[in-house]
Length: 67
Image (cartoon, rainbow, N blue to C red; front, side):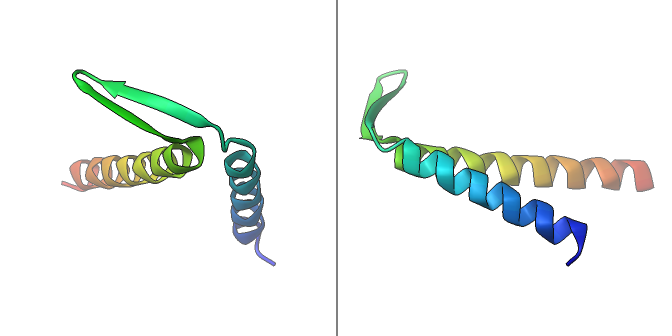
Protein backbone atom coordinates (compact mmCIF):
# COMPACT_ATOMS: atom_id res chain seq x y z
CA UNK A 1 0.00 0.00 0.00
CA UNK A 2 1.06 3.56 -0.64
CA UNK A 3 1.98 5.64 2.43
CA UNK A 4 -0.64 8.23 1.49
CA UNK A 5 -3.43 5.64 1.67
CA UNK A 6 -2.18 4.32 5.02
CA UNK A 7 -2.15 7.83 6.50
CA UNK A 8 -5.67 8.44 5.15
CA UNK A 9 -6.95 5.19 6.70
CA UNK A 10 -5.39 6.05 10.08
CA UNK A 11 -6.90 9.56 10.02
CA UNK A 12 -10.34 8.19 9.17
CA UNK A 13 -10.09 5.63 11.98
CA UNK A 14 -9.12 8.35 14.47
CA UNK A 15 -12.00 10.52 13.28
CA UNK A 16 -14.46 7.63 13.74
CA UNK A 17 -13.22 7.05 17.31
CA UNK A 18 -13.58 10.77 18.05
CA UNK A 19 -17.12 10.82 16.65
CA UNK A 20 -18.25 7.72 18.55
CA UNK A 21 -16.89 9.01 21.86
CA UNK A 22 -18.68 12.37 21.54
CA UNK A 23 -22.35 11.48 21.46
CA UNK A 24 -23.56 13.75 24.29
CA UNK A 25 -25.88 16.70 23.68
CA UNK A 26 -24.26 20.11 23.20
CA UNK A 27 -25.45 23.66 22.58
CA UNK A 28 -23.96 25.84 19.84
CA UNK A 29 -24.68 29.56 20.18
CA UNK A 30 -24.17 32.12 17.42
CA UNK A 31 -25.41 35.63 18.14
CA UNK A 32 -29.18 35.16 18.65
CA UNK A 33 -29.42 31.55 17.53
CA UNK A 34 -29.12 28.56 19.81
CA UNK A 35 -28.68 25.16 18.19
CA UNK A 36 -28.89 22.07 20.36
CA UNK A 37 -27.68 18.80 18.85
CA UNK A 38 -25.44 15.84 19.68
CA UNK A 39 -21.72 16.39 19.18
CA UNK A 40 -21.84 13.47 16.76
CA UNK A 41 -23.39 16.00 14.33
CA UNK A 42 -21.09 18.97 15.04
CA UNK A 43 -17.74 17.13 14.88
CA UNK A 44 -18.10 15.78 11.31
CA UNK A 45 -19.55 19.10 10.22
CA UNK A 46 -16.49 20.92 11.58
CA UNK A 47 -14.14 18.41 9.92
CA UNK A 48 -15.83 18.74 6.53
CA UNK A 49 -15.91 22.55 6.80
CA UNK A 50 -12.21 22.61 7.74
CA UNK A 51 -11.33 20.30 4.86
CA UNK A 52 -13.10 22.44 2.29
CA UNK A 53 -11.67 25.68 3.67
CA UNK A 54 -8.16 24.27 3.57
CA UNK A 55 -8.65 22.86 0.10
CA UNK A 56 -10.00 26.04 -1.44
CA UNK A 57 -7.56 28.36 0.33
CA UNK A 58 -4.64 26.17 -0.74
CA UNK A 59 -5.95 26.02 -4.26
CA UNK A 60 -6.30 29.80 -4.54
CA UNK A 61 -2.76 30.18 -3.16
CA UNK A 62 -1.38 27.93 -5.92
CA UNK A 63 -3.16 30.01 -8.56
CA UNK A 64 -1.57 33.20 -7.22
CA UNK A 65 1.92 31.68 -7.30
CA UNK A 66 1.44 30.42 -10.86
CA UNK A 67 0.31 33.82 -12.15
